[in-house]
Length: 127
Image 1 (tube, rainbow, N blue to C red):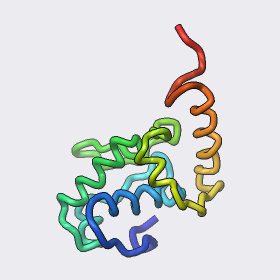
Image 2: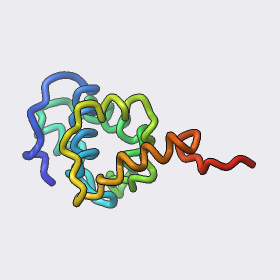
Image 3: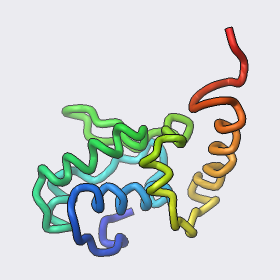
Image 4: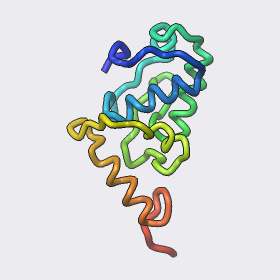
């Protein structure tokens, strides 16, 4: 997906993070896809690279992206997403366009499965 398909951005890094996260959660980029570069996001939304970096830091902290110097930014597998993170809950609020063919159809099931297992990433068993 290109950035052109996203709605306009108005606001700070938090709003930009929400906009990009909702696009990821809706399946606009697939796990393993290369995410747009900082410079491209900055130019597209007419914001500073610092604002983009702050937004991408939030997405990385929530497990949506993996950023590696020299390699770029990749979308992580859904199983690596921190679905119980409060920011993820905020970003998921109002999402209605989850695309099952885009690989996010299991998102709701993953959230329910993790919640039922006693925590993020838990297996439900104790050692």
